[in-house]
Image (cartoon, rainbow, N blue to C red; front, side):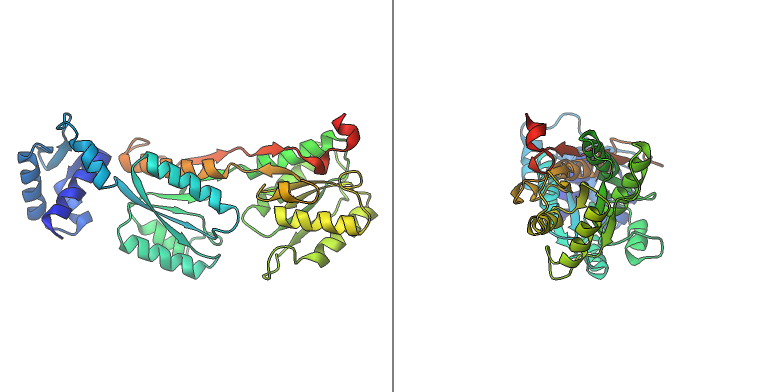
Length: 359
C-alpha cells in the first residue's frame, strides 16, 4: 500500500472515530506498527492530527477548507448492501439507503442475491475481502447459527445491520409488519366484516401477517372459519397462482367471508381479476386489502393497501451502521444491540370503500 493511501485511511479513521491506536490500526490495515508510527509522525508534522501515547487523535481545529476537500475526495466509509432483488419491494429500500449514504458521506456498494443463499454468501465474502467498513443485509433465507452466512457475519469486526429482517444476534431495521397487519384487520372490521380471510405467499413477511391475523381474530371477536391460504409463489412469476386463488375465492364464498388481506400486491390483483370473472364485485361482495403497496393503485379496482416504510428502512439502516462506525451509539466495549421497527401506514382506496361508505 502506498504512503498516500495509508495516510488517507488514517485520516478517514480519525474522521470516523476521532482516535486510533497504532496496534489496532496496524492489525486492521495489515501494516507494521513501525510503518503506522512513521505515518502518524508525518501527518502530525503537517498539522493533520495530534500524536498521543500509543496513537493519534483528530485535530480539533483544521486548516480552512482542508476537511471539506478531504471528504470530497474520500468517503468516510464504504458500506456493502445486499438485497434479494431489485425488481420488487427493495428499490425504495435502496433509494433510502442511497440518500443516507450521500448525506453521511459514505459509499454504497450494492449486491443482489436473487434469493440464493449461496450467491449471498459469495457476495458477502467478496465484500469482506475488499474491506468494506460495514454490511447491510436483507438475507435470502433464514439466518440461523451454523449457516455459512451466520458464521461469516458473526466473525467480522465491522458493523452488521439486517434490513427488513430480525435477529437476536445482529442489529436490525425493519418494518413493523405485525402492526401493518393489525391496521388492515382493524380497518376491515370497522367496515362491519366479521370474517376476514388471509392469503399470503411464503416470504420473510408472511409469518408476521399470519401471527397477527390469528391474534386479531381473537382480539376483535371475529369468526374463526374464514379461509387462510399460505402458498409458494409460482417460479414463472406473478399472477400464476390462479388455482390457489380460485379455491381461496370459492372458500370465501362458501363461508360467507366478504373481506381478505392478501400478500403481495400482485397476487391481490390476481384475486381481483378472478372475482370479476366469477361475478364477485369488489368491494361490494369482497373487500380486499393488499400488503406491500408496490402496484396496489394500478389494480382494476385500486387496492386499499398497507404500505411499509421501505425508504425510511433503508435510510435508517445506513444511519445505524454509520453511527456504530463513529461510536456515537452504545459502548465501545460492549455496545447494546439496537433493533429499530418502523410503522407501516394504511392507504384507503376503492377495494374497501363501497358507494355507501364514501357518502
